Length: 190
Image (tube, rainbow, N blue to C red; front, side, top):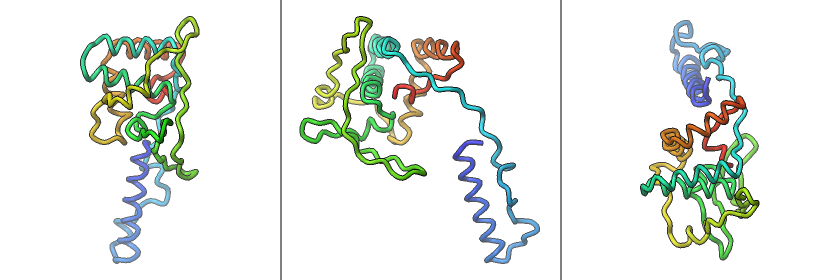
């Protein structure tokens, strides 16, 4: 029932209709069903997406940094950027400075059109005292601090998810989300 299966089924059915209607292939054998729902299947019911609190974001970032590996530090940086600027994981690889302003050049295509590049405004993560965390994200970006290595930026969310699922802190946060009947995914950092 996934979207990719739906698209693949629609493309396959279009090819078969073409073969039957224009190339004389046997309709009796090769015509696709009129209703593809039985072929695609049903989507699994989705749970409410868990929204991380500021304290949970801080715990996550600190736990990743405490691992001490280059990869964990890069993912901690990515987590901080996603949380502060409301980024999708794929948008991490579309950040640019225009003068003093940080922009995201990513263009998401959907049924409602295409998003436009946007200026990013920070929504600081606050500690328990209500004081904004000083992560110096823009300074670190300008200084060339590296983000995680991802072969295809379109798959950044999947890659982030695979890394985080192996971490004890993420597993603890998932349990906290499960307790509320919600689901924790990398997109929850938005």
